Every structure is written in C-alpha cells, then in structure tokens.
Length: 194
Ligand SMILES: [Fe+2]
Image (cartoon, rainbow, N blue to C red; front, side, top):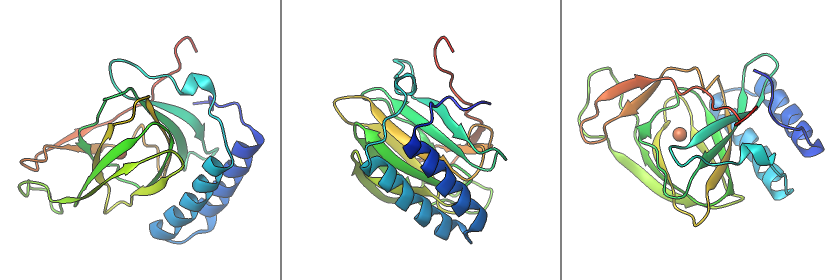
C-alpha cells in the first residue's frame, strides 16, 4: 500500500531514523527504546499529521497507514478514537511504540498469559492516562496485552510504530474475565474518498 502521508521534512527525518534503528539495533527492548526517543522528538518538534488521517468515525476507532517501510518491515499508523471509544483487550504479537498526538488515552495493561489453554482471568499490570506529547513502549512480543479508551474531550489520536505489518498480523482478543482468546486480523482503514 502506498503511503498516505504528505511527507514533511520532520517526517522524512523520522522515517530515516527509524529505518536506521530497525536495521541496526539489537533486541526489541533496544529498538523500542530508541524509536520512543525519536517519536518523542517528532511530537515535541510540532509535527502535524495530514488532516485526512485525523478523522474519527462514529462507529469505531480507525487505523490509517501513515507510512510503510519500503521493505515492509515496519509501519507507522495514525490511530483515531472518537470521544469515548474503546478497544477490547488485545495483543499485538510484535513490538510497538505509541505517542499521543491529541486527546487522552486511558491504557489498562495485563500480563500476557503463556501457554495455549485459557489460564483464567487476566492479571492487571497497571494503567495510565497518556496525554499529548507522551510516548510509551506499548509492546514487546512477550508483553503486549492492553485495552485503551479515549477519555479526552476531543478525539484521541495516536502515532504508532510497529515491528511488523500490524494490519495483517494474527492477533489475540481476550476475554479478561476468563482468559479466552479469539484471533483477529485488524486490516487498515482507508481515507474516505481516497
Ligand atoms: Fe493496542
């Protein structure tokens, strides 16, 4: 899929930096720490998303592709929740770094169950309200289970970097009360009229 972003100089430099990190860094913990530094700097520098990638839907949260690496190794997404929208508890099955661009995001984290059988209720592992300019390492492959809710007065927009094609990866949706897993593939959302 082609990139939907008009690439500003700030974004071009960010993409070049992440390409370098992904191709040279060691494990997921090093990659995510270095990507988080760069995403923090991008937000602090006042990067502005293309307006068409900030539109919310009244039906559900949307995930727009902002950039996809030439070799497909990492995508950058603009994720938009209308006021009050929330996700279920889900996994990512790869590393991920998320920065808040607008609104406020309430994140509830859970320990990732090991083994294939439902292990019973998920174990909460903390919660945070993230606000614009803040960046979090949401995921490494072994620690990637959370639910998020848009709690600001305006739509919540996140800029997310992932270690694989997040739109195509088979991911887990959890019933936190039972640990039961349902697999899903999220896909990308398109820009209306594009
Ligand atoms: Fe997530």
